[in-house]
Image 1 (cartoon, rainbow, N blue to C red):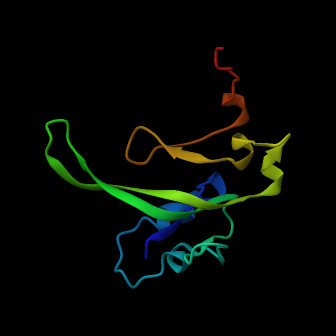
Image 2 (image 1 turned 30 degrees about the vertical axis):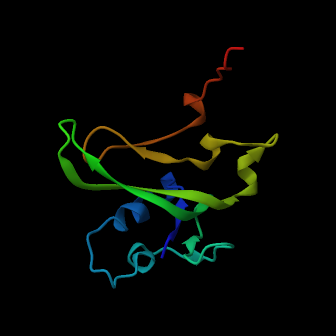
Length: 130
């Protein structure tokens, strides 16, 4: 469709996110599969995950086929888009800035099943030099 929504994966949504990664037929609704409620987007047609505290509405700009270090093309793709709409839960904004750790985002790391949650204890400040 040329449009998509990126939804922040959080610790509370981890199991649903994992369920949505199942290899299923194209006619299977991943929202239903994962037990997720949808919320309408404002600008793009695809809905967003209602429970996600941050979501970006995007319009597709390019799809890149990835390659190995020796130049062999892989059956792996990187999809990029322009953000045209942003949804951030108000409680995640403090002093005009998005507070990443307050959302309890998760990320992949290490082994095939390893994930990490970003927490406030891992935060540190570092200003760019002049």
